[in-house]
Structures are given as C-alpha cells and as structure tokens.
Length: 204
Image (cartoon, rainbow, N blue to C red; front, side, top):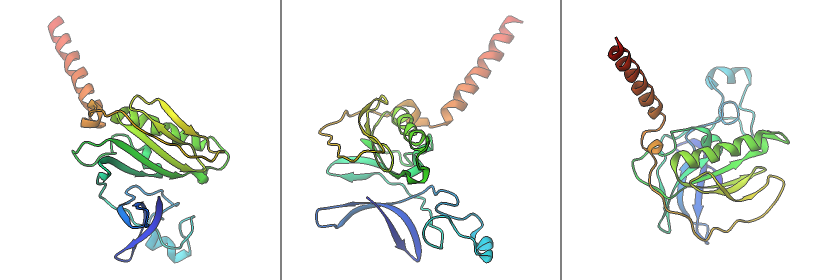
C-alpha cells in the first residue's frame, strides 16, 4: 500500500508491505517524483512568493536513490510508485534477478481523460522489456496482471471495483534489454555504423 513516511525530517511518498498485524515488513521510498505534483523545482526561491506544489501539503516530497528488490514469501519484486513505470531501462537498479514488477498508482490526476490508459500502456512495455510479470494496482486507474509477453491476463477498469487473485505465474530469465537497458540502442547504432563503413570500404 502507499503511505507518506518521514525520515530525518524528510517526507517521502512510500510503498509498504504489511502483515496481518499491520507491522511493516518492507518499505520503498519513491525515486522519481512528479514535478509540481510532488515537488516544486527551485523550491527555496519560489516559496518566497508563496508558491508550493499543487498537491496537499506545503513542502515538497524528498526523493530517495535506492530501489532494492523486495522479498516477501520467497517472491522477489521490484517496487515502482505511480509514474516511475514510464522510465524505460531504469527499473532494476541492482544486478539481482527478480520475479515480478509491482506498480501502485493513483491516477486521479488525469480525471476522465485518456491519461489512465496512456499510463497503463507503459506497464505493458515495461513487462515486455524486462521479460517479467507485472502487477499494477491503481486507484482511479486500470489495475492488471500482465505476463512477460505483455499480455493482459486480468484487469479491472478504472470505473470498476474488484479484487484479482493470482495463484501462479511464469518464472522467466533476464532479457537482453533488461541486462543492457537503453544502452542496447547505442550498441545497435555502433554496429550499424561499423557495418556501413566496412561495406563501403569493401566496395571501393
């Protein structure tokens, strides 16, 4: 579930895993914050004019730099909060393998627009890139279970309420993209340029 947490006088947008007694088993602090929604750029300057972020609370949230894989009941997952799902090639900050991606989100920002659908579509791309199952839980958005091929196995529309039960999921290995991230496009470009000059010199 999502909460606001405080550490060393800093406020974080966090995800926590709780047991049946509401004890915190694991916690993740959001790394990528929404500009103006969760933090005000150049806050020290603009707050002199009474400006603040557009969401509740006066001060900005703080961003964390760690994104550790969380293990619960021998299931390893990468935690992502809200629009962190849109960052291609920057999901897993460790070299450790994992079982699935867990994304929680509040899509009420978008209102009755195409926004929740666009936000959800990024989840499909991330599951394919990483070759991993993805669970998405979104208030006022689309919740779903997506397999490593990007196929939507179950989903709940933004206008519906409900619960999804996942009894099993496919175990998969790392993909080429998950190993190299967006650097892979640079490698392809380098190979293409090298091949171009090789063929050009060979034909001379």
